[in-house]
Amino acid sequence: SRMTLKITVIGTGYLGATHAAAMAELGFEVLGLDVVPEKVEMLAAGRVPMYEPGLEELLARHVAGIEGSSGRLRFTTSWEEVGAFGDVHFVCVNTPQKHGEYACDMSHVDAAFASLAAVVRDGALVVGKSTVPVGSADRLAELLPEGVELAWNPEFLREGFAVQDTLRPDRIVVGVRSERAEKTLREVYAVPVGEGSPFVVTDFPTAELVKTAANSFLATKISFINAMAEVCEAAGGDVAKLAEAIGHDDRIGAKFLRAGIGFGGGCLPKDIRAFMARAGELGADQALTFLREIDSINMRRRGQMVEMAREALGGSSFLGRRVAVLGATFKPDSDDVRDSPALNVAGQIHLQGGQVTVYDPKGMDNARKVFPTLGYADSAVEAVRGADVVLHLTEWREFRELDPAELASVASSRVILDGRNALDGELWRAAGWIYRAMGRPRS
Ligand code: UDX
Image 1 (cartoon, rainbow, N blue to C red):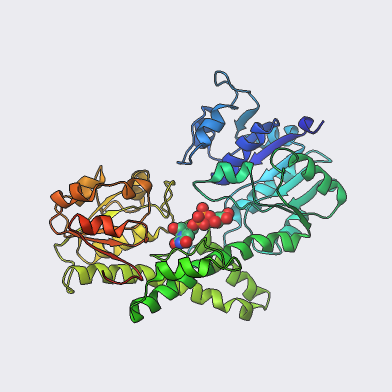
Image 2: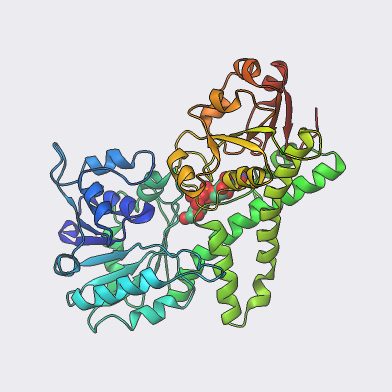
């Protein structure tokens, strides 16, 4: 039966940890490998090194040694163990942006393939899941011993929804060179994961491109609506109404049209940059010059938020002014602050002399690490106490549930700027606040 397939997952970040737990949930025996011993220790104890709703519960159901668990999921730092164990190896290591360059850093992927190649059993299948520049799979296949095949299977999970996206994906995409590889992957993704999910079989370059194309499209949607927000600001229009109205056209769709301070995180910004860099190498850079504009619209929003705050404070300097910042993560339901627009805005104001106090429900530890010189508070109310202006920069549910009247009683000046178009402006105005949102009329 398919359950006799033994699965390894190499790299236990967002993608790998979630994939490993999901595979165990499906009934497979799973061995996860990470080169960082501390991560392996944490996971082996059933703890997740990041905040991801539902993931810790899923792990606890399967990690060997935890009371009441299925025992199907183990973790190791040993490549020998991985090689001896696995019939199918999923490579889930990260591909960050290279320092000071657009291209992505393939060193983790290259190292994983080199280590795996030395230990992998004859007849095993290696499956790449990392987001890589198109052409990588062809190159990586050459590194594997004869008798070991490669497949490419991009992953589309969103942080904050990692578990549900992995167990119930919109689609499964596999790039393969043989029917045997396709058959093995169909077995792995048979019920319940594959149930109802379209299964798209293609070649290596197309499979690699699907991922970068999807993220480029999403980035384009966000920058499109943010460009419309700029026009609305100039013309006196309301971008939220505009988005609602165009979203009723199901060729456009209502999702990913929330204007604000733009996209961040570990994927969209670096993926569109790496895509441009790769297209340049292939002589197809003209095809993607529009992504440069998508990137600059996105980065411009952060500066526009800073200017909105300056204006709210009377238009001159931030020096000595108290600025409360609600939100530090790049999106809600995550503790991830990588390329976070919220933290970037907070940092810009701080560097211009503002007295910034940040509060985030889950991102405080990570924010403190990357930006230790900012002020931090333990709650939204404490952040807002004495503030001359309040910036809402990550749309956590906790912020939508704040009591504007309570905050009005602790703020020094009742001005709130909504960088995510997510608060109920009428509610805030009713409690005596000046509420302003990006791309929307003033009252
Ligand atoms: C993204 C893709 O959605 C996912 O499919 C891929 O696998 C990895 O990259 P993620 O980085 O988790 O996932 O975040 P996502 O939910 O896509 O949001 C990205 C950013 O866009 C966030 O900063 C978010 O605040 C912003 N965003 C999103 C907007 O500004 N407006 C929107 O309408 C939607």
